[in-house]
Length: 218
Image 1 (cartoon, rainbow, N blue to C red):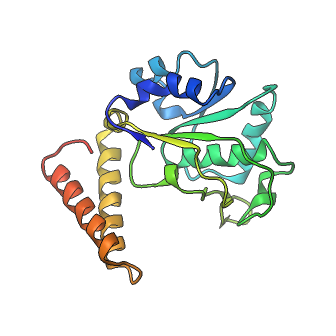
Image 2: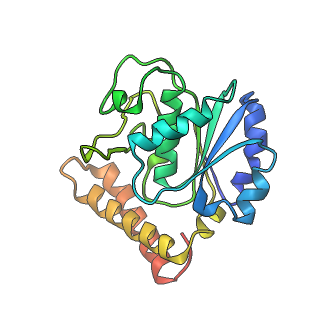
């Protein structure tokens, strides 16, 4: 995990360090015109801007993978956006290396071919998608939500830039802050909590509530 204000500016150097030469960007369409994002992915030629009006679906995965597969070679996926965008990138990372429609991988698939590396760059907080292997998807026809949860599909690397978070609309920042506050409470009161986890839950609660009270971006 790479974190800190302006850490997004290091993206080009990070790709060189990991020898990624044919990266694609999957970015939430709602944020594609933010100057801070536009300037810092300008050097990348292959960009896909995807709109999410609800949680991503298996059907949407199948539609977009057809466009992405037209690219001859991809060695890394850069996901910029909220939890839906990062989850979507994880799904693409599996579909580019394994045959079959997205619905085939619903649930907890096993013994898949190695997925493509994903660099997760969240623009919201609280989803945690940038540090877990789970990816949420819905099947529109059956209205079932099981996702694609492959235990080896962790993001290769995550960039947490507070400046990116601050570019979100105030409504999104507030919603994310409240969701983060809820997670701090849940992890403190969980039956599985212990002295160590409660310490971090308490610290998170204090930091988030202080920021909300001071009306600062988190």
